[in-house]
Image (cartoon, rainbow, N blue to C red; front, side, top):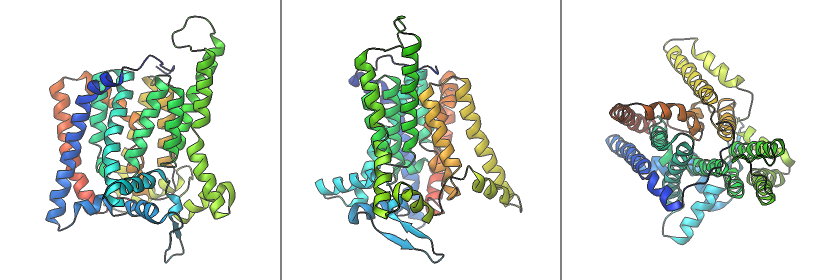
Length: 395
């Protein structure tokens, strides 16, 4: 399965009917999470809707939508937080919703996230169904829904929007729709810095296809598509893919007057960067200096080990190359960032291919056992999400 699959995608109407069980299950899990959040928040005399739409990063996105770029906050320690750190697609959509409806920018962000989360669930199903079959697709969607930080999928954040674009871009690659894949990668690159992962997946898959074209021309291999029109579409997809990320980063560099590396300076103002995981490793090691903090340290080590194991399992199971490249880049960027250590589970939300080995195992188990496991985890996730958002929560 590491070779690129290019079998035809099912018709759109048929694809939606095929995905209905996954989407219905996803909606049920997310409804349970929202219900738990609203009940928990009411008990603590807090507004659940405010937690979902008007705190942390959601406020920064709304400010971009309302005022544009240029808003900054100077902290007491001298750090400069600029809204240039936030990519523009979600604020653009918030502004669009506010322009065509009576909804506020914050309401627009919530609406976009709800719609995008369903689109992401459908995209995850499409990818998993294409690789492992329908039951695995349903299980993959439900596993994504019941993640401990799954409540973020319903917040006015960009994770759901990005995951939707990334999942459908990967599906387009797997089904040989190169221009669609490049366009979706472009929009993913306008959503989050990790859009680089989608670009990398498109480029690596395209290069692998070109290599196969050259190494096995005219041999009748159904996975080899050497027609000139296909090669042109492949090149066009490669050309489109990086335009979103590159365009925004270069625009920030021009606006700040610091050239192509200006965006890195903006991130440095947030004390965020890429250090290969050194700061995170030190953060984890410091947990073992006392008790009970050592328990948290052990939990972090177990979490990172689980992520590495899931990725290695995907490699052993020969997941398609685009999925492995995408997941590897998302995981590396999440774990090797030098700040906001509590955000790492949230930053891993788009790395849904990590869940495919578990989805495949659940798909092979008896339906009652799979349902019991997913139901139990869904309840635990809903309770944890309500607790987390009413406590430390994101960023």
